[in-house]
Length: 133
Image 1 (tube, rainbow, N blue to C red):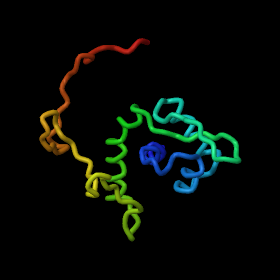
Image 2: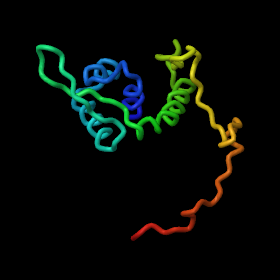
Image 3: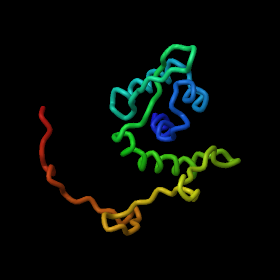
Image 4: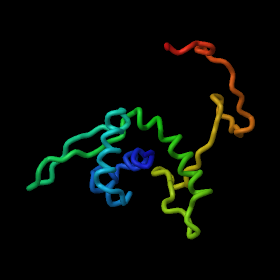
């Protein structure tokens, strides 16, 4: 499902038909997943109309959805490493500004690169709170 949000973050894919063509997904499943992403506030719908046809929705990523982009980038990067076709990646992810490849990384709030084995979980403000039964 994260593929849908990733595609919506790229403004070239915003219409139902764009998602259908790129993802090669059954229409009913695609409709259900897009509806769920809209209900969760990850995507929003806007109306567009091509002259001579009826109004239709197009999808735009919301600020909540944009906050998922780093996670989606990690999943895509993982898939490129472990699940890619032997012929290579289906897509490269490049920056629009300079054209360089995008690489997901973990950084601390001071900007230092951090390796997964160097991450430590420490209690936060809600530590020890019980959820309502």
